[in-house]
Length: 261
View (tube, rainbow, N blue to C red):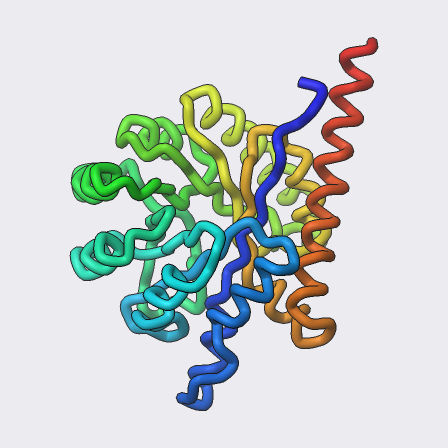
């Protein structure tokens, strides 16, 4: 495989809505942010409609579906209320995530092994509606194997522990988490799953993980919205896109050298 598969960038606009909601107004508008991100090179838009509506609101999801030209990835908990909204909205994809009201952000992967009986009908109904289902899970073999058994076509590997270890300078922990991610991505592809990754990624970690050939998409939000305060969202998207492309190019160069050896 001399030409590695392209790596897509999904931009999460949740925290544009967080800033808007701080003043209970209408600006900044997450839909406008989505349009800017797409113009700058984003391949899709991600938004998490939480039970407590702390950032994205119901009307945001409806407007995103109506106004953006790229795929919409609807992150949500596996509840009847969210399933109803997802089936009405008909996004390109739904990513099922764990959710607790008291958490600041999603703290870990979904336990699909422990919750498989509850998740199975959700996944089936979304599949039947033509909505691609992704499961946000840790790079754990048991979780990956259960995701395949549940007929979810996609998993998104939670990269938070690895990113935190990299930022904190915990080299041994970072290496251990990195090996788990790579092994998990390989296992998932072998099982016929499409592999995405996200949580805590910045320019450097996105460039690194772009070298994993099995990963097809990165979903990144909080870091990019923070950077956008200083350089603008369009420039942030272009810089992230360039970092990912550099990582993918390293993968292609390695594969080319290996083929000639």
